[in-house]
Length: 341
Image (cartoon, rainbow, N blue to C red; front, side):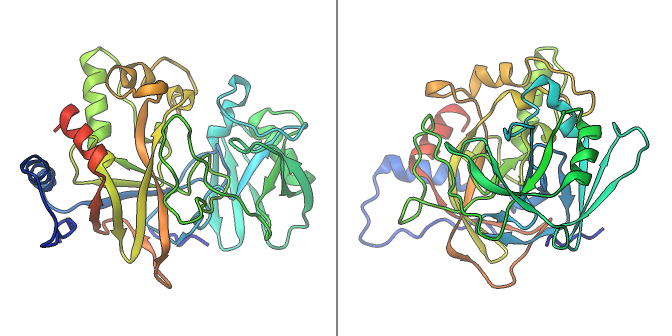
């Protein structure tokens, strides 16, 4: 499970046979010099139960379908439909905290009257197959229902009548989801990449300086700043300029190599304050003024997919690890330079 505990970016070599135009060389020089210092990991998060609170880590273990412990379970309603804080009567999901202790999950919530947490031994608990609807999946899939006791606790914590805790079984198999509005194919030979119960991809990367730039714009318009919890990233990095994460194509973090794949279009989940659960127009309204692409995608963050055989045996990722930039995406780089460079 997840471990819990209290050199300059690389630019792809240009071969002697390559013909480099003056324009592309100029663009390359500008991007190469835009990264000042070393790019590093600032924060790591997993979300053991989808739509519930984050679990912030010092070290996480990568797998092809996401960090160990990330989106391994979800809450469904009495009809088998996934539960999401996008629905106003389900926002208390955000206040369910989940801790991982070996094979056990410990659940806590301020909304449980007696304040009692619930501990679930994932391996020892008897489960039953349950047909469930999963967001971004066209047909129901089979998950494992963890029983009545934990279901009763979640009903008290969330106020969702008849809800059930369901999770990934040993035969779970699902592929990453292409967002047709983004127009970016999965970078694998067969067009597939494994994923957990996450919406689209196994990992989401965000950039601290992009959040700072967004908050600067919010402040200029008399709006309150937002924190990174609004965007639910797995990996937060520091050391790039604002929105420069858009330009990346391939990175490596401590013997783990990733494709920087699909831009993450944001939805109404970002407009919910994680503490008060109040809703408002921000930050989507401000993102719409400078981050909206064709087909209405308002982007914040980049989806990652591990390169095939790109996870070294025993590899982990730890806060402060260096992020090596192995390759840039030429088209996204040109777009970034025009808008922000």
